[in-house]
Amino acid sequence: MRLFATVFLTTTLVSTSVSAFDPQHLKQLKETNAYVKCDLSDADLSDLDLARAKIYRSNISGTSLSGTNLMSAHLVGSKFIGANFEGADMKNAKLIRARFRDATLAETDLTGANLKGANLRNITQNNALFCNTIMPDGFVDRSGF
Image (cartoon, rainbow, N blue to C red; front, side):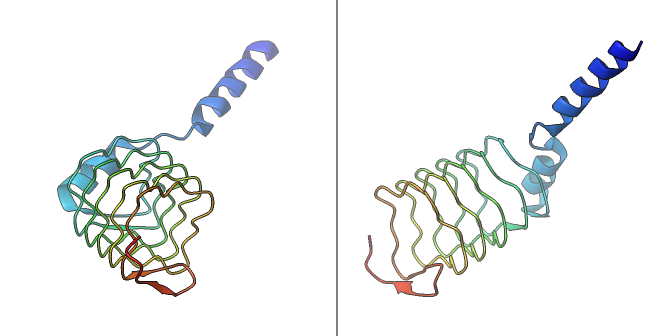
């Protein structure tokens, strides 16, 4: 009996510690284009139209946002660790204090985006467009690269 309880408890702890998105959070986001503190980790949000979405302090780590329209979206304080934004449109997005560590921003358009206080450690940014983009230190990048 003790062995069964140990195996059951271990299995339960391991299965509940695995991070996966909450389908209800995704449903609400699609219906309202807004969410606070949602868990969309490891979800596939590729090619969605989330323009002007309001997503605050949410976990979007490991998520695929490839080709997603995030124009003028407010993603303040959200966590995108290891997320894939390849080819996403993030023009004029508010990304203040967002965490992009190990994320892919290749070919992403960040024209006019606000990244003040964002964590961009170890990102992949091949051919990303930074034009009039407010960088994490507050510097406005006008290079167009």
